[in-house]
Length: 237
Length: 93
Image (cartoon, rainbow over all chains, first blue to last red):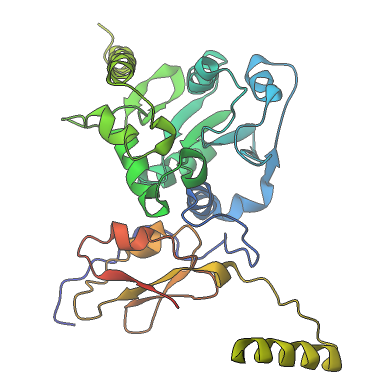
């Protein structure tokens, strides 16, 4: 071989756990990609994983009681481990009846409920996702990971853009990738020095076809305030 | 005409051999385009393998990559994610 070579999957386990023979997912499914990468991180703990739809009692579980997030029922995964559990939410923004504000605040609610490890992840950043799931498994007590999975059918974009859209969501700061360790120590894992304009993230999605420029400006103000809140938490003065 | 004749023939064959018209479902059956690698340009980085949602891409013995046609759904993520523009989507007839 007279060329330089960098084999990227060397950083991931090469064994395939998510190879269903009758995989019914649509072409370019972000959810399938996220599940495949999560299964790679779980490895030995894969047998303890189970799909849950709803819970009772606490506010955190009650929010999911109203409607399952996602087009099909199982979008929450629970992995039991010693001294707690790891809950992973695969969010494709399809739960219409769910209160949008509460929906976006799921990681914040998890922090308030005293979870020991809370993180947001995206399948467009596979190694970031891999490390977060590993950390969630190692953390003592409860852990929660929120994953944004682009859905070509629901969001109405070209299936080949799935990974790009997930990346643009992070680059435009619409979806911030961070983790909260014990003692609520915030850490932003993926940072962007020059944020991408929000319109570039919204435009390829046909569900935002009728959005006006005023609405885009309003949304980008919300995005900026969210980013400010996170930076204040990272560096408390 | 030829295609209808073929269809009728297959129907008769199926009924005679008691096979039935149903075939086992394969996820890649409804694919519109198939990824193809330019083997001279490929740097063997494996990004296409990492981003494939269906786990259809595998590594051959010489370090290059190929798509399993039974699993590949032709979404085109590998074509879009390849840094070097090695993968092209070839439309099927």
